[in-house]
Image 1 (tube, rainbow, N blue to C red):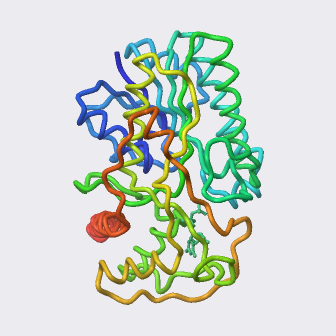
Image 2: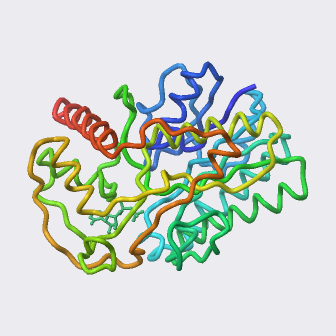
Length: 331
Ligand code: UDP
């Protein structure tokens, strides 16, 4: 019995692989390495470099490793890119997910955990949002993920197959043991931009809009430490293996901070000033996106352990330093 992790060489997937190994589980990874790194997957893990849309490769892994559960991270995640390349996003996120779900049905894999996103809510009329808040994605990225949720729902209705779709809020931070983190230099997320500025890799970071109707004019997000997000996946895995019902779950802490509060936390934790410049609003940014995540706690039994912005900042910084040292050593 083993767990197949798609996208296991990426930011969140690599943390899942480490957590499964820590828990003594058998794990195998399929990743096409477009945004992931081979070194992010420990040597003892079976690694298949292939596209998740390659049904032959996926079926072979499932059969060879006696896979009973799939954790599906592989996909494209850049919202503006999804606007300029919608068909690419529907291919990578929706068509390839359909192919994986079909592989599960055909080979008898009964459990799937899917990386969904708070982007399915679009610009919600209410905050915080529950799983019952109407979905109304405003980007092809959000739509591509929501369509996969629908395919999972309908497949679970028709077949002996169960799923948990986790709607991620803003994932940040890195493995507290320094084994993995956000390694993609092209990542544009707030914490990544802040760390790159703190280390002098970037000269400054931009604040995208100070004129929102929030407590200080900047956008509010529910930042969740990547290790807690992985904790929700582990809880979902046990839940599904124990016969739990399919469902959709928010993954956040249920409270948010503004961009300025995040900058202040970085300055406090690192004891250094961050060079910021004001910039225009970024298209498609909702003013506030905060979860109600009670369902994951009560149904999956998830208990977050790192609900602390300072811990997110410190672990993100420690990882960025490790990455930076590697780049320096390679040059
Ligand atoms: N943000 C910012 N500067 C940056 C990156 C992000 O001001 O360099 C803001 C962004 O406008 C949003 C918040 O930080 O309000 C979180 O953005 P991020 O890209 O991290 O995640 P998103 O919420 O878009 O998924």
